[in-house]
Image (cartoon, rainbow, N blue to C red; front, side):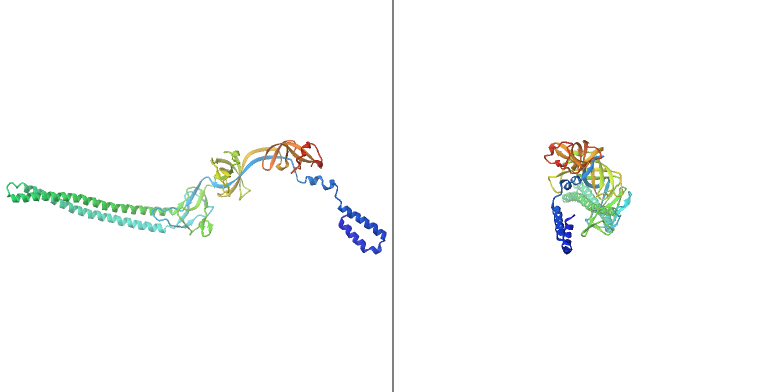
Length: 446
Protein backbone atom coordinates (compact mmCIF):
# COMPACT_ATOMS: atom_id res chain seq x y z
CA UNK A 1 0.00 0.00 0.00
CA UNK A 2 1.42 3.42 -0.90
CA UNK A 3 2.16 6.15 1.66
CA UNK A 4 -0.43 8.50 0.19
CA UNK A 5 -3.19 5.93 0.69
CA UNK A 6 -2.14 5.41 4.32
CA UNK A 7 -2.31 9.12 5.07
CA UNK A 8 -5.77 9.36 3.58
CA UNK A 9 -6.88 6.30 5.63
CA UNK A 10 -5.67 7.92 8.88
CA UNK A 11 -7.61 11.09 8.10
CA UNK A 12 -10.73 9.04 7.42
CA UNK A 13 -10.32 7.25 10.76
CA UNK A 14 -9.94 10.54 12.60
CA UNK A 15 -13.15 11.83 11.03
CA UNK A 16 -15.08 8.73 12.13
CA UNK A 17 -13.51 8.30 15.54
CA UNK A 18 -16.86 8.75 17.25
CA UNK A 19 -18.25 5.55 15.73
CA UNK A 20 -15.17 3.38 16.24
CA UNK A 21 -14.00 1.85 19.48
CA UNK A 22 -10.82 3.32 20.95
CA UNK A 23 -8.98 0.01 21.00
CA UNK A 24 -9.77 -0.70 17.43
CA UNK A 25 -8.64 2.82 16.47
CA UNK A 26 -5.29 2.31 18.26
CA UNK A 27 -4.63 -0.97 16.50
CA UNK A 28 -5.46 0.57 13.09
CA UNK A 29 -3.21 3.53 13.76
CA UNK A 30 -0.32 1.24 14.68
CA UNK A 31 -0.84 -0.74 11.46
CA UNK A 32 -0.81 2.47 9.41
CA UNK A 33 2.36 3.70 11.08
CA UNK A 34 4.01 0.37 10.37
CA UNK A 35 3.04 0.70 6.71
CA UNK A 36 4.36 4.26 6.67
CA UNK A 37 7.66 3.10 8.06
CA UNK A 38 7.81 0.42 5.38
CA UNK A 39 7.55 3.17 2.71
CA UNK A 40 10.78 4.72 3.92
CA UNK A 41 12.83 1.51 4.01
CA UNK A 42 15.19 0.85 1.01
CA UNK A 43 14.20 -1.86 -1.41
CA UNK A 44 16.15 -5.10 -1.51
CA UNK A 45 19.25 -5.18 -3.76
CA UNK A 46 17.73 -7.53 -6.31
CA UNK A 47 14.71 -5.25 -6.76
CA UNK A 48 16.80 -2.09 -6.93
CA UNK A 49 19.19 -3.39 -9.62
CA UNK A 50 17.48 -5.89 -11.87
CA UNK A 51 19.38 -7.27 -14.84
CA UNK A 52 17.15 -5.39 -17.25
CA UNK A 53 18.19 -2.07 -15.70
CA UNK A 54 21.90 -2.94 -15.71
CA UNK A 55 21.88 -3.88 -19.42
CA UNK A 56 19.11 -1.67 -20.68
CA UNK A 57 21.17 -0.61 -23.73
CA UNK A 58 22.01 -3.81 -25.57
CA UNK A 59 22.69 -4.94 -29.09
CA UNK A 60 22.50 -8.28 -30.85
CA UNK A 61 25.58 -9.59 -32.64
CA UNK A 62 24.78 -9.94 -36.32
CA UNK A 63 26.54 -10.80 -39.54
CA UNK A 64 26.80 -8.19 -42.25
CA UNK A 65 29.04 -6.15 -44.46
CA UNK A 66 31.91 -4.26 -42.88
CA UNK A 67 33.00 -1.07 -44.62
CA UNK A 68 35.93 1.09 -43.62
CA UNK A 69 35.75 4.43 -45.42
CA UNK A 70 37.15 7.96 -45.23
CA UNK A 71 34.62 10.75 -45.67
CA UNK A 72 35.72 13.63 -47.91
CA UNK A 73 33.81 16.77 -48.79
CA UNK A 74 34.06 18.67 -52.04
CA UNK A 75 32.31 20.43 -54.89
CA UNK A 76 30.95 18.98 -58.12
CA UNK A 77 32.43 20.36 -61.33
CA UNK A 78 32.36 19.46 -65.00
CA UNK A 79 35.25 17.67 -66.65
CA UNK A 80 34.55 19.48 -69.93
CA UNK A 81 33.28 23.03 -69.72
CA UNK A 82 33.46 26.34 -71.57
CA UNK A 83 33.35 29.66 -69.75
CA UNK A 84 31.42 32.44 -71.47
CA UNK A 85 32.60 35.96 -70.67
CA UNK A 86 31.61 39.39 -71.86
CA UNK A 87 33.89 40.07 -74.86
CA UNK A 88 36.87 42.40 -74.60
CA UNK A 89 36.49 44.87 -77.45
CA UNK A 90 39.48 45.77 -79.62
CA UNK A 91 40.37 49.19 -80.93
CA UNK A 92 38.30 51.20 -78.48
CA UNK A 93 37.81 52.20 -74.82
CA UNK A 94 36.53 49.61 -72.38
CA UNK A 95 32.90 50.28 -71.54
CA UNK A 96 29.94 48.32 -70.20
CA UNK A 97 27.75 46.31 -72.53
CA UNK A 98 24.01 45.68 -72.39
CA UNK A 99 22.64 42.15 -72.69
CA UNK A 100 19.83 41.93 -75.23
CA UNK A 101 19.36 38.15 -75.19
CA UNK A 102 20.51 35.33 -72.90
CA UNK A 103 19.45 31.70 -72.53
CA UNK A 104 17.89 30.55 -69.28
CA UNK A 105 19.73 28.69 -66.57
CA UNK A 106 19.69 24.90 -67.07
CA UNK A 107 18.95 25.08 -70.82
CA UNK A 108 20.42 22.29 -72.92
CA UNK A 109 22.14 23.68 -76.01
CA UNK A 110 23.85 22.25 -79.05
CA UNK A 111 27.03 23.35 -80.72
CA UNK A 112 26.40 26.59 -82.63
CA UNK A 113 23.33 27.69 -80.64
CA UNK A 114 23.27 31.35 -79.59
CA UNK A 115 24.02 31.73 -75.89
CA UNK A 116 24.02 35.49 -75.37
CA UNK A 117 23.74 38.65 -77.47
CA UNK A 118 24.81 42.21 -76.60
CA UNK A 119 23.64 45.59 -77.87
CA UNK A 120 25.64 46.37 -81.04
CA UNK A 121 24.50 49.96 -81.76
CA UNK A 122 27.73 51.54 -80.55
CA UNK A 123 29.80 49.12 -82.57
CA UNK A 124 27.76 49.75 -85.71
CA UNK A 125 28.30 53.50 -85.24
CA UNK A 126 32.03 52.89 -84.83
CA UNK A 127 32.06 50.90 -88.07
CA UNK A 128 30.40 53.75 -89.98
CA UNK A 129 32.74 56.34 -88.46
CA UNK A 130 35.88 54.34 -89.15
CA UNK A 131 34.70 53.53 -92.68
CA UNK A 132 34.06 57.22 -93.39
CA UNK A 133 37.49 58.10 -92.04
CA UNK A 134 39.04 55.43 -94.23
CA UNK A 135 37.23 56.65 -97.36
CA UNK A 136 38.32 60.24 -96.63
CA UNK A 137 41.95 59.22 -96.32
CA UNK A 138 41.78 57.23 -99.55
CA UNK A 139 40.50 60.35 -101.33
CA UNK A 140 43.26 62.46 -99.77
CA UNK A 141 45.86 60.00 -100.98
CA UNK A 142 44.50 60.19 -104.49
CA UNK A 143 44.56 64.00 -104.43
CA UNK A 144 48.06 64.01 -103.01
CA UNK A 145 49.29 61.62 -105.68
CA UNK A 146 47.76 63.84 -108.38
CA UNK A 147 49.34 66.98 -106.90
CA UNK A 148 52.70 65.31 -106.61
CA UNK A 149 52.49 64.08 -110.18
CA UNK A 150 51.83 67.66 -111.39
CA UNK A 151 54.67 69.07 -109.31
CA UNK A 152 56.98 66.34 -110.55
CA UNK A 153 56.12 67.20 -114.16
CA UNK A 154 56.90 70.87 -113.53
CA UNK A 155 60.19 69.97 -111.87
CA UNK A 156 61.16 67.65 -114.70
CA UNK A 157 60.33 70.37 -117.28
CA UNK A 158 62.51 72.81 -115.37
CA UNK A 159 65.25 70.21 -115.19
CA UNK A 160 65.06 69.66 -118.93
CA UNK A 161 65.33 73.45 -119.45
CA UNK A 162 68.40 73.53 -117.27
CA UNK A 163 69.96 70.70 -119.26
CA UNK A 164 69.22 72.59 -122.51
CA UNK A 165 70.79 75.72 -121.04
CA UNK A 166 73.86 73.70 -120.13
CA UNK A 167 74.17 72.34 -123.66
CA UNK A 168 73.80 75.83 -125.08
CA UNK A 169 76.53 77.07 -122.72
CA UNK A 170 78.83 74.27 -123.88
CA UNK A 171 78.23 75.22 -127.53
CA UNK A 172 79.02 78.86 -126.74
CA UNK A 173 82.24 77.75 -125.03
CA UNK A 174 83.46 76.31 -128.33
CA UNK A 175 83.31 79.81 -129.85
CA UNK A 176 85.66 81.34 -127.26
CA UNK A 177 88.66 81.08 -129.64
CA UNK A 178 87.02 83.24 -132.28
CA UNK A 179 85.01 85.65 -130.14
CA UNK A 180 86.34 88.61 -128.19
CA UNK A 181 87.76 87.95 -124.79
CA UNK A 182 84.86 89.68 -123.07
CA UNK A 183 82.37 87.41 -124.78
CA UNK A 184 84.53 84.39 -123.97
CA UNK A 185 84.46 85.39 -120.28
CA UNK A 186 80.69 85.74 -120.44
CA UNK A 187 80.41 82.27 -121.99
CA UNK A 188 82.46 80.80 -119.14
CA UNK A 189 80.22 82.43 -116.56
CA UNK A 190 77.11 81.20 -118.37
CA UNK A 191 78.50 77.67 -118.41
CA UNK A 192 79.29 77.73 -114.69
CA UNK A 193 75.85 79.16 -113.93
CA UNK A 194 74.12 76.48 -116.07
CA UNK A 195 76.08 73.69 -114.39
CA UNK A 196 75.29 75.04 -110.88
CA UNK A 197 71.63 75.47 -111.71
CA UNK A 198 71.36 71.94 -113.13
CA UNK A 199 73.04 70.49 -110.05
CA UNK A 200 70.79 72.51 -107.76
CA UNK A 201 67.68 71.38 -109.61
CA UNK A 202 68.73 67.74 -109.40
CA UNK A 203 69.39 67.98 -105.64
CA UNK A 204 66.18 69.87 -105.04
CA UNK A 205 64.18 67.42 -107.13
CA UNK A 206 65.52 64.48 -105.07
CA UNK A 207 64.57 66.22 -101.81
CA UNK A 208 61.12 67.07 -103.16
CA UNK A 209 60.58 63.44 -104.13
CA UNK A 210 61.60 62.25 -100.64
CA UNK A 211 59.28 64.80 -99.01
CA UNK A 212 56.42 63.83 -101.32
CA UNK A 213 56.97 60.15 -100.56
CA UNK A 214 56.97 60.94 -96.81
CA UNK A 215 53.72 62.92 -97.08
CA UNK A 216 52.14 60.14 -99.07
CA UNK A 217 53.38 57.54 -96.57
CA UNK A 218 51.84 59.45 -93.64
CA UNK A 219 48.49 59.46 -95.39
CA UNK A 220 48.84 55.76 -96.20
CA UNK A 221 49.59 54.96 -92.53
CA UNK A 222 46.53 56.95 -91.46
CA UNK A 223 44.52 55.12 -94.10
CA UNK A 224 45.75 51.72 -92.86
CA UNK A 225 44.96 52.65 -89.25
CA UNK A 226 41.48 53.72 -90.24
CA UNK A 227 41.06 50.47 -92.15
CA UNK A 228 42.19 48.42 -89.12
CA UNK A 229 39.85 50.39 -86.88
CA UNK A 230 36.98 49.65 -89.25
CA UNK A 231 37.90 45.96 -89.25
CA UNK A 232 38.14 45.96 -85.44
CA UNK A 233 34.73 47.59 -85.21
CA UNK A 234 33.32 45.01 -87.61
CA UNK A 235 34.91 42.24 -85.56
CA UNK A 236 33.42 43.74 -82.38
CA UNK A 237 29.98 43.47 -83.98
CA UNK A 238 30.58 39.76 -84.51
CA UNK A 239 31.68 39.42 -80.87
CA UNK A 240 28.33 40.77 -79.74
CA UNK A 241 26.88 37.31 -80.49
CA UNK A 242 28.36 34.31 -78.64
CA UNK A 243 27.60 30.78 -79.79
CA UNK A 244 28.05 27.52 -77.92
CA UNK A 245 31.26 25.65 -78.87
CA UNK A 246 29.87 22.30 -77.65
CA UNK A 247 26.76 20.38 -76.72
CA UNK A 248 25.98 20.81 -73.07
CA UNK A 249 24.07 22.42 -70.24
CA UNK A 250 23.98 26.15 -69.49
CA UNK A 251 24.90 27.21 -65.95
CA UNK A 252 24.55 30.97 -65.42
CA UNK A 253 27.07 32.78 -63.21
CA UNK A 254 25.43 35.24 -60.77
CA UNK A 255 26.34 38.89 -61.27
CA UNK A 256 26.22 41.79 -58.85
CA UNK A 257 23.03 43.78 -59.32
CA UNK A 258 22.75 46.44 -56.68
CA UNK A 259 23.12 44.68 -53.35
CA UNK A 260 22.12 41.24 -54.66
CA UNK A 261 23.70 38.47 -56.67
CA UNK A 262 21.29 37.43 -59.44
CA UNK A 263 21.44 35.53 -62.72
CA UNK A 264 22.14 37.81 -65.72
CA UNK A 265 19.08 38.74 -67.75
CA UNK A 266 18.08 41.00 -70.65
CA UNK A 267 18.87 44.64 -70.00
CA UNK A 268 21.69 44.04 -67.50
CA UNK A 269 25.01 45.83 -67.97
CA UNK A 270 28.20 43.81 -67.75
CA UNK A 271 31.84 44.78 -67.98
CA UNK A 272 34.17 43.30 -70.60
CA UNK A 273 35.80 40.13 -69.32
CA UNK A 274 33.11 39.45 -66.73
CA UNK A 275 31.86 35.85 -66.44
CA UNK A 276 28.30 35.25 -67.59
CA UNK A 277 27.82 31.49 -67.79
CA UNK A 278 29.39 28.10 -68.29
CA UNK A 279 28.45 25.46 -70.81
CA UNK A 280 29.19 22.09 -69.22
CA UNK A 281 29.04 18.56 -70.52
CA UNK A 282 26.80 16.76 -67.98
CA UNK A 283 27.93 13.36 -69.24
CA UNK A 284 31.30 13.74 -67.48
CA UNK A 285 31.35 15.21 -63.97
CA UNK A 286 33.90 15.11 -61.16
CA UNK A 287 34.30 16.15 -57.53
CA UNK A 288 37.18 18.26 -56.28
CA UNK A 289 37.62 17.39 -52.59
CA UNK A 290 40.09 18.12 -49.81
CA UNK A 291 41.98 15.37 -47.98
CA UNK A 292 43.33 16.04 -44.50
CA UNK A 293 47.05 15.42 -44.09
CA UNK A 294 46.37 12.70 -41.48
CA UNK A 295 44.31 10.70 -44.01
CA UNK A 296 46.48 11.11 -47.11
CA UNK A 297 48.47 7.94 -46.32
CA UNK A 298 45.29 5.87 -46.80
CA UNK A 299 44.18 7.59 -50.01
CA UNK A 300 45.64 6.60 -53.38
CA UNK A 301 44.83 6.92 -57.05
CA UNK A 302 42.40 4.31 -58.37
CA UNK A 303 40.44 3.76 -55.16
CA UNK A 304 36.69 3.33 -55.59
CA UNK A 305 34.34 5.75 -53.87
CA UNK A 306 30.67 6.42 -53.18
CA UNK A 307 29.52 9.93 -54.02
CA UNK A 308 26.38 11.51 -52.56
CA UNK A 309 25.05 15.00 -53.20
CA UNK A 310 24.21 17.04 -50.12
CA UNK A 311 21.21 18.53 -51.95
CA UNK A 312 19.93 15.09 -53.04
CA UNK A 313 21.08 12.53 -50.43
CA UNK A 314 19.03 9.74 -52.02
CA UNK A 315 21.21 9.79 -55.14
CA UNK A 316 24.26 7.53 -55.02
CA UNK A 317 27.03 7.57 -57.64
CA UNK A 318 30.08 5.39 -58.00
CA UNK A 319 33.40 7.16 -58.41
CA UNK A 320 37.15 6.68 -58.59
CA UNK A 321 40.07 8.82 -57.49
CA UNK A 322 41.80 10.11 -60.62
CA UNK A 323 44.30 12.67 -59.30
CA UNK A 324 45.88 13.73 -56.01
CA UNK A 325 47.88 16.92 -55.63
CA UNK A 326 51.56 16.47 -54.92
CA UNK A 327 51.81 19.43 -52.53
CA UNK A 328 49.54 20.22 -49.59
CA UNK A 329 48.02 23.64 -49.04
CA UNK A 330 47.11 25.46 -45.84
CA UNK A 331 43.56 25.23 -44.56
CA UNK A 332 41.07 28.07 -44.49
CA UNK A 333 41.10 28.46 -40.70
CA UNK A 334 44.54 27.28 -39.63
CA UNK A 335 47.90 27.23 -41.40
CA UNK A 336 48.99 24.27 -39.28
CA UNK A 337 46.30 22.02 -40.80
CA UNK A 338 47.30 21.06 -44.32
CA UNK A 339 45.09 19.62 -47.05
CA UNK A 340 45.66 17.78 -50.30
CA UNK A 341 43.32 18.11 -53.27
CA UNK A 342 41.83 14.95 -54.76
CA UNK A 343 39.82 14.78 -57.98
CA UNK A 344 37.18 12.02 -58.06
CA UNK A 345 35.55 11.10 -61.36
CA UNK A 346 31.82 10.29 -61.20
CA UNK A 347 30.41 7.36 -63.11
CA UNK A 348 26.95 7.81 -64.60
CA UNK A 349 24.83 10.92 -64.97
CA UNK A 350 21.60 12.39 -63.67
CA UNK A 351 19.69 15.62 -64.44
CA UNK A 352 20.21 16.65 -60.81
CA UNK A 353 23.99 16.25 -61.05
CA UNK A 354 24.91 19.91 -61.54
CA UNK A 355 28.15 21.86 -61.09
CA UNK A 356 28.82 23.77 -57.86
CA UNK A 357 26.79 21.33 -55.74
CA UNK A 358 28.50 20.13 -52.57
CA UNK A 359 29.09 16.40 -52.27
CA UNK A 360 30.22 13.83 -49.72
CA UNK A 361 32.71 11.22 -50.95
CA UNK A 362 33.28 7.95 -49.09
CA UNK A 363 36.66 6.47 -50.04
CA UNK A 364 36.49 2.68 -49.69
CA UNK A 365 39.51 1.49 -47.71
CA UNK A 366 38.34 -2.04 -46.81
CA UNK A 367 35.18 -4.11 -47.35
CA UNK A 368 34.44 -7.49 -45.69
CA UNK A 369 31.37 -9.60 -46.36
CA UNK A 370 29.43 -11.83 -43.92
CA UNK A 371 31.39 -11.00 -40.75
CA UNK A 372 30.23 -10.65 -37.13
CA UNK A 373 29.76 -7.00 -36.22
CA UNK A 374 29.26 -5.19 -32.91
CA UNK A 375 29.27 -1.49 -32.14
CA UNK A 376 32.66 -0.09 -31.36
CA UNK A 377 31.52 1.08 -27.91
CA UNK A 378 30.57 -2.52 -26.99
CA UNK A 379 34.29 -3.42 -26.76
CA UNK A 380 36.19 -2.83 -23.52
CA UNK A 381 39.97 -3.20 -23.33
CA UNK A 382 41.72 -4.57 -20.25
CA UNK A 383 45.45 -5.23 -20.38
CA UNK A 384 45.49 -5.51 -24.19
CA UNK A 385 42.58 -7.96 -24.04
CA UNK A 386 39.19 -7.13 -25.58
CA UNK A 387 36.10 -7.97 -23.55
CA UNK A 388 32.37 -7.75 -24.14
CA UNK A 389 29.52 -7.88 -21.62
CA UNK A 390 27.23 -10.73 -22.69
CA UNK A 391 23.59 -10.71 -21.50
CA UNK A 392 22.44 -14.34 -21.17
CA UNK A 393 19.52 -15.81 -19.18
CA UNK A 394 19.11 -12.63 -17.13
CA UNK A 395 22.79 -12.65 -16.12
CA UNK A 396 25.90 -10.83 -17.31
CA UNK A 397 29.08 -12.53 -18.41
CA UNK A 398 32.36 -10.88 -19.34
CA UNK A 399 33.79 -12.71 -22.30
CA UNK A 400 37.13 -12.24 -24.00
CA UNK A 401 36.93 -11.83 -27.76
CA UNK A 402 39.32 -11.45 -30.64
CA UNK A 403 38.65 -8.34 -32.67
CA UNK A 404 39.46 -7.60 -36.29
CA UNK A 405 39.31 -4.40 -38.33
CA UNK A 406 37.24 -1.51 -37.03
CA UNK A 407 35.90 1.74 -38.36
CA UNK A 408 34.35 4.76 -36.66
CA UNK A 409 31.20 2.81 -35.69
CA UNK A 410 31.69 -0.97 -35.88
CA UNK A 411 34.20 -3.65 -34.95
CA UNK A 412 34.66 -7.05 -36.57
CA UNK A 413 34.59 -10.01 -34.13
CA UNK A 414 36.86 -12.80 -35.34
CA UNK A 415 36.24 -15.21 -32.44
CA UNK A 416 34.62 -15.39 -29.01
CA UNK A 417 31.01 -14.60 -30.00
CA UNK A 418 28.27 -16.16 -32.07
CA UNK A 419 25.58 -14.61 -34.17
CA UNK A 420 22.50 -13.71 -32.15
CA UNK A 421 24.36 -13.15 -28.87
CA UNK A 422 23.13 -10.13 -26.92
CA UNK A 423 25.85 -7.83 -25.58
CA UNK A 424 25.77 -4.55 -23.68
CA UNK A 425 26.40 -1.47 -25.76
CA UNK A 426 28.53 0.07 -23.00
CA UNK A 427 30.16 -2.69 -20.87
CA UNK A 428 30.79 -1.84 -17.18
CA UNK A 429 34.27 -3.26 -16.70
CA UNK A 430 36.23 -1.46 -13.98
CA UNK A 431 39.97 -1.13 -13.69
CA UNK A 432 40.13 -3.94 -11.10
CA UNK A 433 38.09 -6.37 -13.17
CA UNK A 434 41.16 -8.13 -14.47
CA UNK A 435 40.54 -10.75 -11.78
CA UNK A 436 37.25 -11.74 -13.43
CA UNK A 437 37.97 -14.47 -15.92
CA UNK A 438 35.92 -15.19 -19.02
CA UNK A 439 32.91 -17.22 -18.05
CA UNK A 440 32.62 -15.69 -14.53
CA UNK A 441 29.05 -14.48 -14.03
CA UNK A 442 26.99 -12.40 -11.65
CA UNK A 443 26.35 -8.78 -10.96
CA UNK A 444 28.87 -8.66 -8.17
CA UNK A 445 31.70 -8.21 -10.71
CA UNK A 446 30.34 -4.89 -11.84
